[in-house]
Length: 90
Image (tube, rainbow, N blue to C red; front, side, top):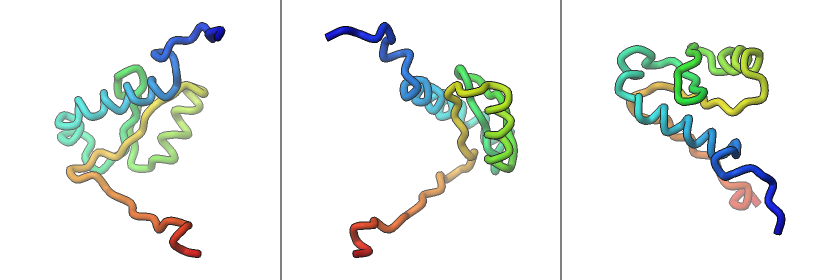
């Protein structure tokens, strides 16, 4: 089987997971400075923050293009969204 020349390290999914880990590692510092805001990570660094996640994403797409970046809300207790399963609605 022929390879694509890309390693697992180069995949967008791996890059996104790395950004999420950077967010988690810096969580305590983020809470002190950005609690209640959304922060964006690219290449392990904070590259933006805003109270509006859509505005933050718009700016990052304009600045970074189609590169993988991670946006998360800085909060003490993560918000959990419960959505009904479509299978249960039948």
